[in-house]
Image (cartoon, rainbow, N blue to C red; front, side, top):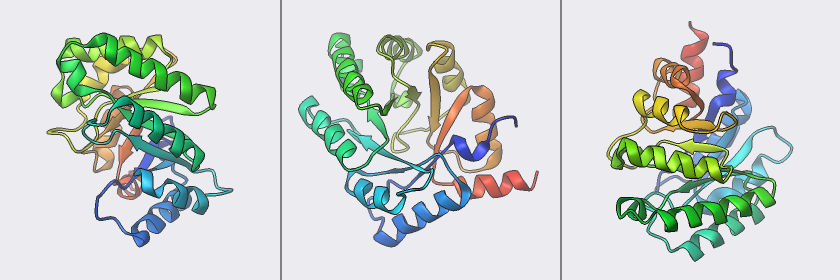
Length: 221
């Protein structure tokens, strides 16, 4: 593969029962394998940012995760707090209920507001669609909105929905975003062959808790 595989990986631990030792391990593995980022819950951003200080590995935090049941004001507060605590990248769950209700103006207003805020802080925003709940038409409409407001990545899944990333939806998303944007495939990517397939379909970033396995299998190719 022509790209640096390790730099496609957001090394992820979003388990509700993850402990301090788990996040120490996550950060240490990310340093060892030079992953792009660690992706962690809000309460662990500051801890991971401190542990990764002076390292190349970024800190990514999820917002409205995993169900997007928070009102917009709380999501904006989460974003502000995350950036103050050292987050470099924000993975925002789209308002899925608003999408399914065809409240597209509300969906776009939220994405616009948060995208502008994150960009003004010189940070990076990814928008999580949770594609398992969406039709192709809804995915395309979200891609259009994210393209309009300069979102850096569109992302397939939280990993907590009924299904994770699939190749067809990655291709669909890639075909309907601005060329300057990228797709993050996330959910159910557990080995090198699955990672390779997602990248070949158009993913520029992978959200996975199996980054170490993926790299070790890649080295055996």
